[in-house]
Amino acid sequence: MTVYLHHNDLPADLNLGKIIAVDGEMMGLSPHRDRLCLLQFSAGDGDAHLVKFDGKDYSAPRVKAVLGDANILKIFHFARTDLAYIRHWLGVRCTPVFCTKMASRFARTFAPRHGMKDLIKELLHIDFTKGQQQTSDWGSETLSDEQLSYAADDVLYLHALREELIKLLQRENRMELAQAAFDYLPFRAEMDLGGWPDDVLAYQSTGK
Image 1 (cartoon, rainbow, N blue to C red):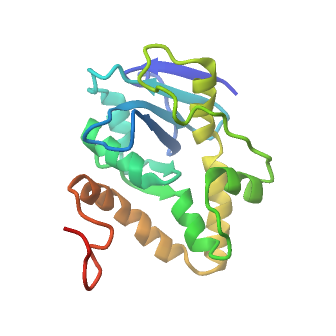
Image 2: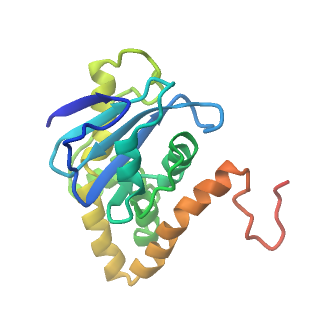
């Protein structure tokens, strides 16, 4: 595995292919308040490309071209948050997408846990232990080796997880339902940015 760190954009000569894994690291959980610090990409070849934003320059034309390319499938784990940040900070409606967490919830209704660690262990049979960097300062001017490794881990297994989850979805005849949910996610992210509650489709909403 090789981890490549880029600043503010992907290199011009990098071709990640038609199916890429994507993840983001932020300063917090509010897109309007907390900035996008890092985006991680993998082509499924065992390498990770990390793009570190300085907080001032989000022009990133090559990142935006990849994320907005309708011919490139983007794999996320819990896409909803990442899509909202990408939309807010980069101005891109990221499509099409595949969310491994949502896919697991559709395919593995027998399972109580759908976190990445659990999926890697149960579907890929890898005893995976994440580092302790989730709540670290991703806005730091210099990222530690531990932070880079943690960030890379978030994209290195997504291709394999997608393949296994597709098998389960097809077996249970839920692929069409899952795909419809994936197609909805970019719009759900925009609803999140607009402050719409989760129960907006409910008969009686509890939201304001």
